[in-house]
Image (cartoon, rainbow, N blue to C red):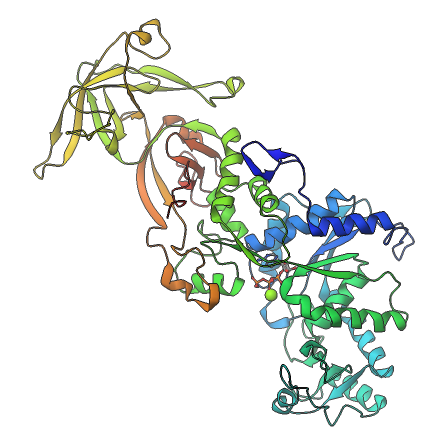
Length: 584
Ligand code: ATP
Ligand code: MG
């Protein structure tokens, strides 16, 4: 494995790291397990087929990005295909809005579901007829029955860990009777919960998921795609393997909590293969560890709570761990893919440090982002010997390592904005910036010597005075005659752009805000968003939404894609230049 020079522990950006799922596919490809398969039109199938199967009940978050990069990434690396599939079997929580944003996020991350046989975008709800037909088959073949116990009895008879369950009194009802009831369930003759269709497996199985799990339940609910056509809906554990098999998925990757569901996944497919519904080889489920990110929550339910309680400003709040939030914060698709690659694929649950995500963004933007000057905590600097009406152009490279990207220019004038922290009336030890009698270089401009300051009635410094040396301009011969220890940045008070800047930071102060059932709302970072008015290099007027910059000394910033207007960009801090959380 080659390594990344910036971070030897991480794989090189172009070389995928080995992991157990990649090894598994390697072995399957080598053994020809899924070779020579044909689709139902007789066309050859790609060597592997994966799928990304979100439920359209919320916005995607960084954990989903992991699954997307894994499923689409493996398909790409092995010349296979990844199907985009909405697992929309649960009628009440799903909406078109979520379908749209999910598709948008997957595309934005750089993936798509097209290949030379067309678009592979599927909806589980399109399989409702097939799922129903297969359920009838299972009843007829003696593998499923309609149970008419009350919900309480069913729960009671399920047993518990270490204690076997009890057979339902309806378990051995004749198949014809179950079939008749099932058809009447479908016809709408019963109320929710009156009957349920269950697989007939083993009520004494040590695996609770094999104790005659439910297959279909009555739910008089409107579905966002099928409307009121159905009043019975398949259970996830029954539908999922069938969806995979219909789509001829070879590798079905899911998170670890589904490990105990795998025997039922296999049971469903084996029974239906016996019934002639599916050809072998059947899809195989393999589990990997969920991505948990420190200082973040990655659960749609908890994200929704943050929004409902107005703790953040919506799904796309730049502090949110949603894809739309990260995008608005200034994350690039490349940085998120790099992060997912560096996070790796594990077999047991672990936490990945937020610093890894932020580091991936820095590594991506360092090379891409144009440089600009921004004064975030402004203090007036007056160059008393600078001519009142003079405006003298200074220039700086757009990017220090890419001269081919050209130069930017900005004027220096008599009155400037500098950072408050770049002046100290009484300097502390080792302070080399402005203090009375000291010289500093105004970056890309002149050397100035501090002559004093003005204060308000409370003793607060409101302006700093200096004088400049006309022969000291950066880039001229005279510049070398001045040796100074400090360099500070500045913008012209007259020409700079006044702009709203939002300084975002981590949303939580606890690295594991929701671990072990903790209340994540108790560990909110009160300083996760600070809105300031800053003065920017005048060229920033032309910044377009989503444009990213490194504000020198401050970090990476993006022109907000929602609130910026032409000529008036609003900036979000995506990430600081260095990780200030490391030592905490
Ligand atoms: P949530 O708990 O946030 O609702 P989910 O797992 O219910 O998430 P789905 O829409 O069902 O969300 O997930 C779609 C796919 O994304 C699934 O294959 C799921 O395993 C995967 N996924 C979801 N969260 C993570 C995560 N944190 N890490 C890796 N994969 C994830
Ligand atoms: Mg879910």
